[in-house]
Amino acid sequence: MSTLPRTIHHPLIGDRVTFIETAEETGGSHLTVEVELAPNGKNDLHYHVTFVERFEVVEGELGLRLGKEILFLSRGGTAEVPLYVRHLFFNPSAKHPVTFRVTITPARQFEACLRIAYGLAVDGKVNKKGIPLKFAHLAVLMELGESYLTFLPHWIQVRLFRFLARRARRSGAAKELEKYYKAEETPDGRLFQKN
Image 1 (cartoon, rainbow, N blue to C red):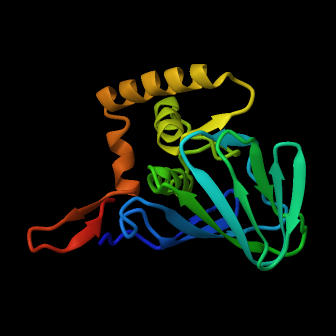
Image 2: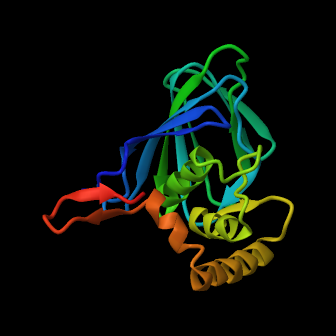
Image 3: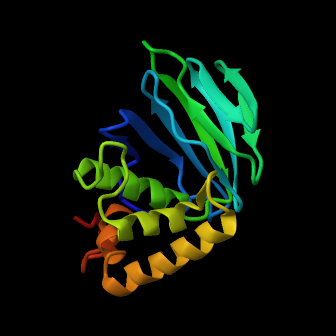
């Protein structure tokens, strides 16, 4: 079992993610996180082709755009985002956070992607929008997260980020990111997070 922190925080976005079930714990079948999204918080329109997401609201109200449809889910409300569907989520409240769970099936490398993105933000290695300052780091994140932009053809993004991520691995830039998502074993068998 990993000794990585269960909860991570993004200082720019102001949200908190707690890993309820990690990929390691589920054998990769899924990943479940609980997100506390700040008032007016949101992400950008995107889609996935290798995993589905299931949202369930724990507290507050969550806005979810699925294709052209806008849903507002309250406590206990659920929605599933199928493959290839453009989507985003947002907190419609200007005063209160919303807490919701997301299950990603299968887990793929999404946990590593989240940990890297939040770790880079904590370390001040992103711009005001949370985008990594090093393009090589962005390429690795895009490849790991398998989240695609809506304004570029899918095949271009896959080829571009695969190529750039390979270059990042060859140059050592990808290795710089391991401290955010890998734990190492000490000679006495204990695990610790890389710094």
